[in-house]
Length: 406
Figure 1 (tube, rainbow, N blue to C red):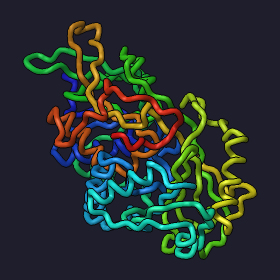
Figure 2: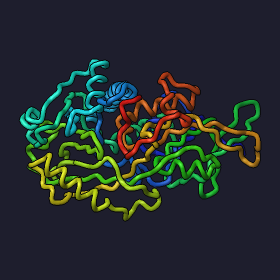
Figure 3: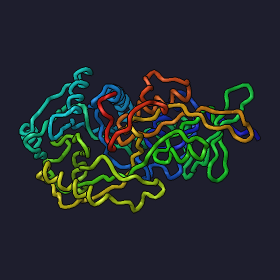
């Protein structure tokens, strides 16, 4: 019996894998998605009901991608008659005016995104949920909100399935290798942990925190990724001040960075979290708690900046993971994987989407489109220099958002 060959095999059905499947299926391709757990699971980085969508970055690369993603999100919403992003506006602030706020102002100006520069008194009056200290500075813009990642994944998966994409749950992958194909480019041979083998004209690896482990098992050791444990902390609050129509998403710049979202469910409260965490083995994430000194720092930060929030302890803490690169920029690139024993010279260049460093969810559709184009066409219309595996970028001193030097 001749084994079927898929056009694209995708390893990992989180946000990025689901988006890649969605756009590959829309190009009429035969797609297989392999997920090691159940679909929409909560063990990785894509689960939950709230992520920040924003276009404000202190550099042009991500602002451009985020603006393009906004149009793609809106198209998905229209196509499926639902809301994926609840717009709230965004407040970026810091204890003092710094390079990040300056970079935000310059980038928003270049892309003609309306914004306002506010002092602490103006912020606290306009958004009474804040109580920023007197010397604080802030930049507000309206193009931001709360993205529902689980609904987004489910929607893209549903559309992809309707177009013929096959999803296999509980299908962990052991390796990806190259294999000769008579009269054509080498195939990607994907071997599952249970010994099942599937073949694709191309393979996209979007395995989140497990990406580096999978690539090492496949014989490739030049992708440097560090999973970290992160903690989605929700806090009891004076509820009428923290609804989406009264409280914008926010980012506090300066180490340690903090982000927050309005209260989307009364039983949860307002979401205020540190943008960092301890290094972790993704297979041992369960049971890893936030370091006590980091938790106490966050409590003090909440008490100082949000006087109508109960800072005594979080009401709820969701466990998550980021997959960090040394410079917090993504990896969207081709990667050679070794040949299989049956085809010892058939090196294959597969596509890798990884290292989204805690800020990729908002750009899911444009990233998914880029990954699908790389796999199907061998190229993308978007510049990818900053996302190459071999880029020469200095590592950051702390886990944080990308700096304004791009």
